[in-house]
Length: 145
Image (cartoon, rainbow, N blue to C red; front, side, top):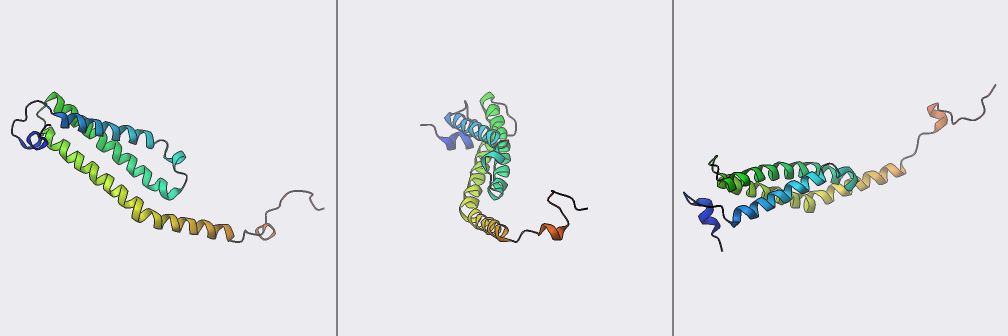
């Protein structure tokens, strides 16, 4: 089994390890998920409260996935640009923080917002509709002479 610590913190890590391939696969999966979710967020999430979290989650997934994939390619090609090992670890950490925030939002903030949205829908359903005679609009039909 490869030593991830040796790869991340060694002065001369040598050839890219399995860690780089796993990180690249994770970043590619995040990029594909974000690219799938972003244009379809309105159709997939009809409730505006849920749609409000889908857009930032998709954009975050696209940004972290594309940057991570870029630095994975740098690590595989062994391009010494700002230590791709550091960026891979940092982007994996950023991805974990993003996933953590998404889980926090889904379990703690979203239920309260959904409840408020549902209460607003119920209130809207039972509000009286404006009377058409008072508002000046006519339904159509015969005109009076």
